[in-house]
Image 1 (cartoon, one colour):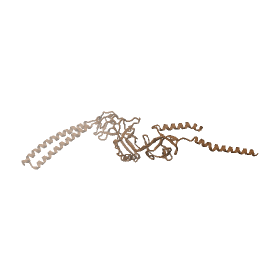
Image 2: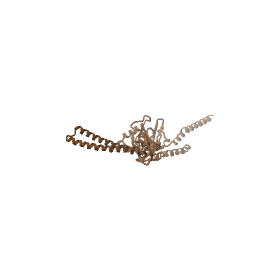
Image 3: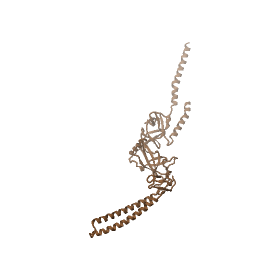
Image 4: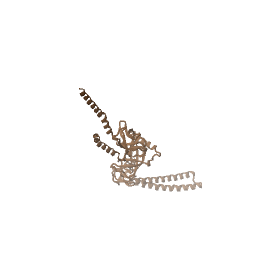
Length: 404
């Protein structure tokens, strides 16, 4: 009985020893055997630089000027010399108004001028005769003054008659209505035979298209930001330093550059925007009034900013953040940042990053704050593809690790 009890106790001891070995020894070996290596991540070194800031705004084309062509003299419209809606050139004849009454006025003015000239000749001869008599003390002072007054009145009458002649000639000239500017005409005009009233009847409207205005708006915040950027420069930009291009509705680029013409000095209270006007050469009339275009401005530069690739930026409950290498260079930590705006190459960062820091741009889906990593230089232009490849490799390697 004692030997049987001893054997039973020995079996229990061996069982406990085996259980202890498998519980405490083997998992530790497995854990040591399956410990994950540092994660390969692509990093770039941040450097402050001057970054171009292109701006794109929606705009509308406006005519350089809209000219209402009005009749300067009244009369019956005898003929219209153009097709409604057609493009005319400056100086082209548009309308002919009946000139007969104005020709009669010119003839009358000519006759009055001849009469006034004859009267003047008579008055001057009479004054000369009275003056000689006065010198010999034959004529009285009163006779001399009357003769001088008659001569001066005759001179004034002749000048008045000559002014009437010029007025009559102008009225005859105004009966032929010409285009004051070049451009397309309106589709509505009085028909032939209609009565045109001086200074009232609008005969047609001409829109001058060359050059063409393009109007667009900036929000108040955008305007203040751009003004702050410009004031921070060593030498503020001038209007001539800004290049202006147009993108048409079909996506094509207008072949001629424009120039900033004017900017509003007040904010529109209805929209909270400021209107900017640019001017473009338009010799072929390709830009039409009220046409929708996109205005592209280049020449503005953000000085000394840090730019991070777009794929390096993540969003969390507190806003945007990125992963940067720690001081030891073997781990990552998250860093909240304040974004400015999108520029060429990614996002311009207002706050949160310093010059010289190493930013993680590849392998973001496999890391977390405090993770041990193996930083390698990220390939330019290939960060996103590198992330996809790394994730695929990680997924493919998972079954083999589980098998071990």
